[in-house]
Length: 498
Image 1 (cartoon, helix red, strand yellow):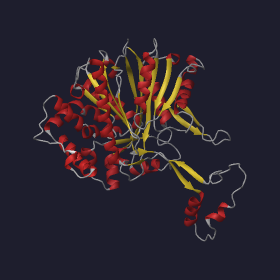
Image 2: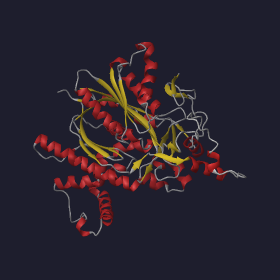
Image 3: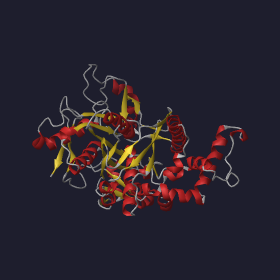
Image 4: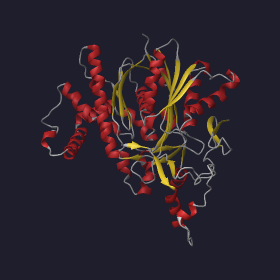
């Protein structure tokens, strides 16, 4: 059976960025903890004309142009995102339409009619799901070509614990048989558990609550919320925000409800469980036990912030060292559940033990060799949710290329994670032509360019207070308008900026 995998990758970087030091000053935070502790330097921010659809379309367009792909050749475009623009209409359809309009003059108005598109959403692991689904599709036919794209804007509430990790961007991947970059193995370790570590619920407010809030802000008003509600029309026709048929108003917000410490634990547990599942399958298939974590040449993790992998990988590092008989229990002894009266006390001790591992010389050397290169781009871009694991891959590849490494036939281990929660662990082998592919990435060149904004501009963007973009988009897809017309209210329209 032919190998399948990623043939090429293209990164779209929003042009606006905020220096983390400026945010630290405004929030009275210690910049050293954000920079040296978490690896944060800059966050990329979408301009008014940018969203998940434009970022995805721009990444795909670069990928198609560089590989001289005809639209008719693309059998599917699968989008992994948690920044969807609609509750029913897939964001991928907006992406498809932008590309169709761009290519219709040269390739015909129906050049993408037979292209299958869909959104896949599972927090930050949605694009990994899209990749595995697409690998199976490519593997099942001859000469199939597909594009998997991840596009997200990680937005948190102002002055929240996640604000300084924000970022935005998109990565498109060409998936084919006999790939030029990396071939992906078909064994996938999976671990899933339904938890509430990070989620974006529909907030529900009663009309009375909304009116009471409004009336509290108004002076000299003697009317109650109940009195005002009685004035609403009794017909079923909906003519405004309060004139809904329901007694409550549902509001979807881009910012999540999250528990950072709990999310770290679910991440830690899911990747361990998924890795164990991966090893079990490999043992059944190969009839021999291998130390994959210790043997993989590079480790590519989902990175909510740049240094997250080096903080979260210590438990797997310990297990790998034990398999190699190089772990010294006398130096660092793991706490045992039986020694503690309750789960909370045990988990606290376990957390302290795992942090202690990260401070050892052996672990620091391991992190430098297998994790550090993947961190570099994240430091300059921020968390980009579903794209983060693939940004780590591009960052590691480009750093190795610049340092003259020979990665041909080397094996990478991947650790995807999505809150809610799920992890997938898999591996890929680097192909002989990887250098020629990676030479066109230009990740760090793109990250060296852009428009630095000040804090007041950042806050206006965050509060949706801009009436026009900070910069004029050129040679890229951008949002043109959002319709207010009857039967089209909320429909989004895009254009190519010459």
